[in-house]
Length: 90
Image 1 (cartoon, rainbow, N blue to C red):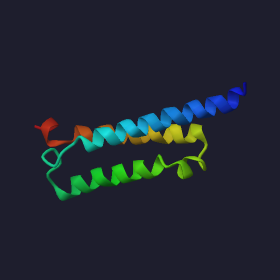
Image 2 (cartoon, rainbow, N blue to C red):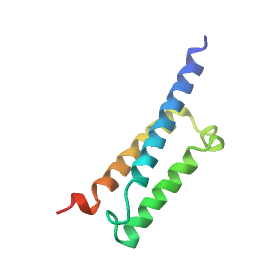
Image 3 (spheres, rainbow, N blue to C red):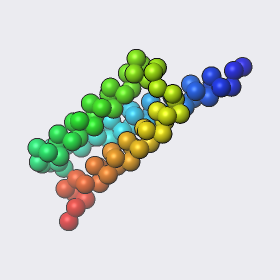
């Protein structure tokens, strides 16, 4: 058993799961929660970026640990965008 290789696969798998969850969270936000063109564009841009990031040809060229670190940062951004929807702002 090659622990280094198995660890890389596990980290990559976790990164992809986080990406999938982030995309799912963003797609569940409807146009009533993000009524302005700018906010809707930001949501779409994030979704497109995450979709590109999860493609196998893009994942191969990035170290899994670096990908995981960046995905966590993107996940925080997705959470901030989700929290800025109209149903959460007075």
